[in-house]
Amino acid sequence: MTVTTAASLTGSASDLREILAAYDLGPSPQARLLHLSENATFEITSGEADGPSDTTALSDGCPGPGGDRRWVLRLHRPEYHDRAAVHSELAWISALRRDGVVRTPAVIPTRSGGSVVTFLRPPAVDPAVPAGSGRNRESEAVDVRHAVLFEWVAGRSPETLEPAALVRAFAQLGGIAARMHLHARSWERPLSFSRFSWTWETMLGRDGRWGSWSAGLAAALTGGPPTGSEAGIGGPEGVGGVLREETELLEKAVRETYRRVVEYGTGAARFGLVHADMRLANLLIPDVASGDDRADDANGEVCVIDFDDCGFGWYLWDLAASLSFIEHLDVAGDLTDAWLTAYQRQLPLTADDIEMIPTFVMMRRLLLVAWLGTHPHSDAVASRAEYARDTCTLADAYLRGRLLAC
Image 1 (cartoon, helix red, strand yellow):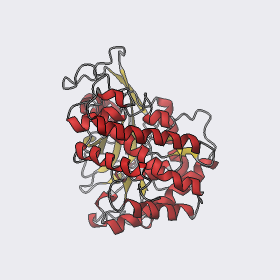
Image 2: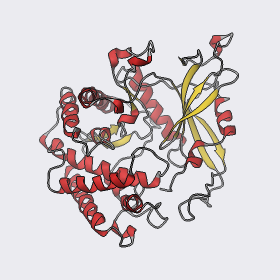
Image 3: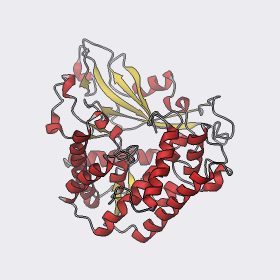
């Protein structure tokens, strides 16, 4: 995976104008960057505080504080999904909404009734990115970019909750995950359905989807960006002899996760269609303090957003993903227990399933070390060095059989 930059994700003002012109959003829609992660996410407003004279001309959107209508635009990063994969994600979202499985934003259609806007642009070149980091992608003449518009859902991330309230939210989340997994097992997918798989090889192998864990570790602890030679290497040889102690510790953990997942297998009761990124940043809870009249929708049920990473993986990967970036906190064990209690009311688990939870949590943590290395623009953690050191502590606990005490 090449190193991403803000410039490669956000697109240009002309790109945004071209995308927004595909929708019925009024004569002067405005875009404001909300977040940069795997993709660029924008808040779109109609730009007319008093509203248009013919409100039927506007795609359905949530009223904003000033009377504007609001939506969320996701501008996909280049080279991550093709158009068929994006359509497949949206097909599952539509089915989940139709069947009342989960609260998640609706997709807003274009003027022509489509769900995806696709356009071509020359690859963005960021001079701040060193040569050899995949900066120019010289073999490609253009970037293929996709964009999807969603309804705006009022709310805030559970990241702001106190520990006791966060445990209650995780109980909800466990029940939601169980419903989604039951739906995935019975849903008849379209013949054209196409999503990638989250396996050990695609996560921690030499060609990991999010890059190299060893390169991410080196970048975090040395303060430098991953080099081109490190970007595709999954093992300790990618760091050139530096940070040997930390790298060898994580390598032991990596090998142990491989041994355990091979033994566990990918049977139909264990492996299927999952959200794969149900972390706190991809959840919304009612923001009662905001005064929004939708704050109590669905009796306060958690709203799940961003199915961009949905694909085929272990069902308990959704639990591991829910603990992203907080695996090292003292409350992680209580969050896990709350999730599992709610989940098993609908989908009982075996002793073998429960035993695999620390392995999936360790795999997710290592995957995030790789992700932080290839996403230097991300603000997901306050200190990458501290996150890497905490990862080593978790790896030691995992190897001693003490991670989460599951």
